[in-house]
Length: 179
Image 1 (cartoon, one colour):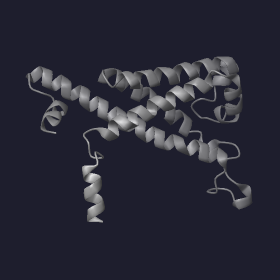
Image 2 (cartoon, rainbow, N blue to C red):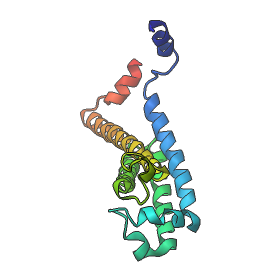
Image 3 (cartoon, rainbow, N blue to C red):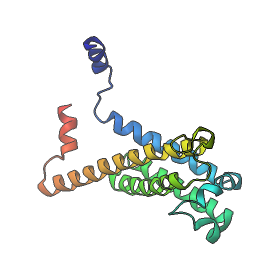
Image 4 (cartoon, helix red, strand yellow):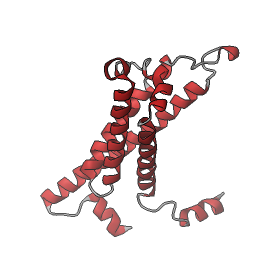
């Protein structure tokens, strides 16, 4: 086991901020793809049973209609993805993207207990999942990733602000110098 750990330790897996950059890139791709799909009424039509049972988003279709919901969700997802992408260079924009992403996945994961057809009656119901609940369960991971990115970006903005006030390198800059 030590041999395996040593190989992994030398592999670049421990490279400074690799996880942070990979998670950010994954979220940018996810929002690009999710946002693209939302521009089509077929996507929203397929999501109507979930949207109408979401305690935070149930109002969208009655208020905005299918087309308006499509535009709102597509625009929001592309906006959050763009802000996360720009967060590579501007952490304040990254904070906005991660905040939007966090709210987005709170809204979608909150559907989980209320989704129609989420629990397999043939297997005894809850906790036996159907594809509906499995589809929504991914939003738990995406919510956690969003919170992680939010924490990282807020911390980096604070570090940079503190360093500029004191005239010293920020903690992240000091880590890069020593790495």
